[in-house]
Length: 214
Image 1: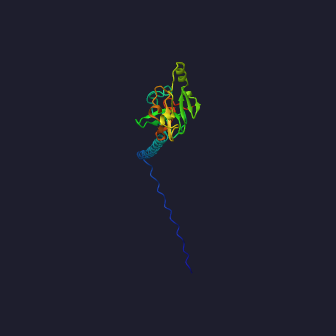
Image 2: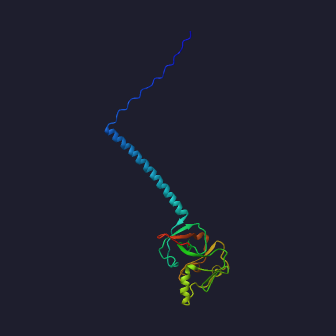
Image 3: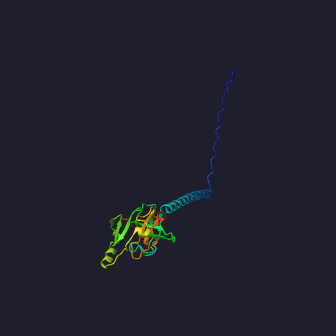
């Protein structure tokens, strides 16, 4: 006769009951847990700080600049020492305030954009003509009125041809002027500026977040 093999039942190991922790051991364990929690929080905080710093650096380097107005060429629109929020790579539109780097001094200057590439610019009798069409400069309306009532001219007569030798502004070059026309150093003084010199368009005064674009 065949013998029937009986499978042995696996023996179940009884779990040893844990010895209750003494007050001192419980206190040490709580300290260890708290230490690990603080270490984890510190690591997470440091990671967030580093990532935030990198993000801010990228934003400032590639998208924003905060130049300071130097001098009185833009009075009364801007005053000496005022700091601006400049958006890099913004679209260049006539009459916007732009920041650019002066090739002669390597300083950052802020002036108003008046003439764009391929445009014919003429000033005569305080009237701006762009491609033979009159353009109103509302930002100097008060000054034009004051000078006109005194029989004086606010902006001297000149043309894009007198600045560049060409009837129209050459490709990738721009004509800029200060609002304080009688005393401003601008394209009438240092010539047209190149596209590569332009940093961006000024949108706000930093101290008051006062908009510069209507």
